[in-house]
Length: 478
Image 1 (cartoon, rainbow, N blue to C red):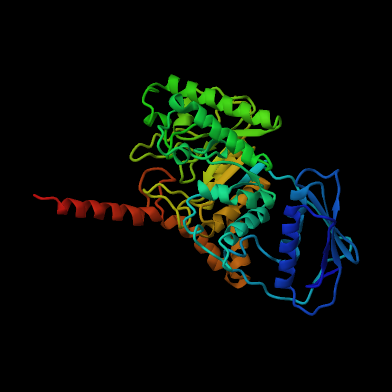
Image 2 (tube, helix red, strand yellow):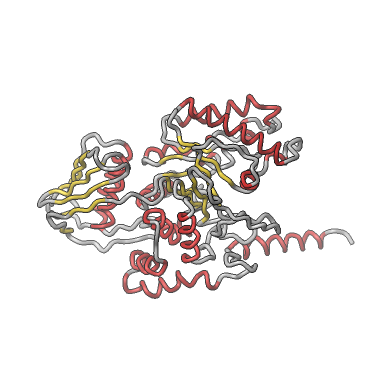
């Protein structure tokens, strides 16, 4: 059969996520294939309950290419596979200003067939965090279009999970994300996706002991507002401003007291969610002070909660640096730690020290591969949430990580050459790939460890901080 710009996509009453993907494929057909061609064959969607969740099968005869799937995401992934395989549209086409080489038609041989393989990671997606370059950006006079393109790109990469922005953005765009078929989850400082206490009650002290009913009301409201969506519910308890709660409530002056309160509140949140949805999936972040409490035996979690381990912001699966304190506690489940495990990993980080917010991660793809495949080997395959920040500066690494969450393995050199060829042309692929692979070799080292390499914040924030302090010192009277 032939694909042309006039190819019709036939589907009976498609669900909203599928309708979005159909519209995207129709756009791609018109983008890649020249107008004025004959009608060509058709693309038909067919439900097939025997296929696995999120799976699809493509088959072609002389006149029709059929997409069979058992659920919405299966159809979505199958439609995007047509776009990539036959039209050559890559996932980051929007972010990398990709332009197609237009052609009259695409021939698909009769008898063609392919079937998807299950992704290596169950829940896999992005946290759109520190989204400063997205928040006021309008494309075609639409503030939501960059966000819609973020969700489309994530789906093209085989993702199924998202935190659609920070704080108020996550509330604004979660309906758009869910309408695309993505599962929602939450920032570790916003349990159940609820409103921050300090925002809802600016005049109240953020102490659970003093304002328990107000906290509970916010959690119930968060559940109610999202009950129509697919959600992996994040449970936990941190202080306002994403810091340990006991900094604002000093009566909790021991690990035992802190762990007891967090454990009790997580179990209460878990019960709230399960009352609304008995099959609900829950997760919690073992991040910062919470990881230390868990490691030392002070946290008591429901058995089926996904435990999420975090890298240090520079791609190493150890606890993050806080100022000059860098204990580098291993952040992977110890042997014998049963249950489901996930990770929160930074393609971008924002620490106002040496992080890479608007430039590439200053550590190599091969370094990332070793860390993530090691995590898979330790059973961390239920949940991967990647901090993608503003997306465009990090597209190269995000593409590589998606290959890992899909297949469980990837080759850095082969990926760099493929990526370079897709976005910069085959004639430039070798030179571009060499520069992508060599980027981390030129990053400034600030410490003795393999991941101690500086990103853009080292060059921007640290000099600004030093100059501000110098000017302040000079202005003081002698």
